[in-house]
Image (cartoon, helix red, strand yellow):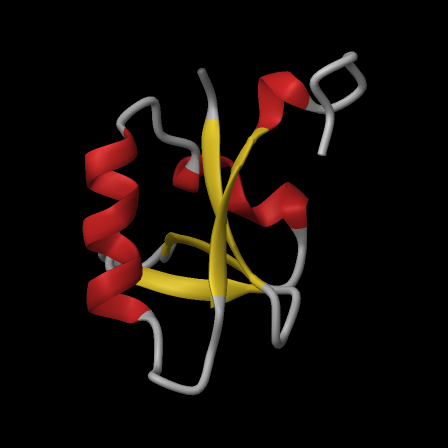
Length: 71
């Protein structure tokens, strides 16, 4: 399972910054490669720590894309 967090409000992806590794929201999926996780609990914690109350974020399983189980 390869999981990534995306904001439904902005469309941005949560990924570690290139300067220090702190989580930041990036526009490009290409820039978010370091944000891919295999741990759903880690994703849930990252969402709680880095999502504003008026934002909605979702966890996307990249391995489901393009399959019969696609979103």
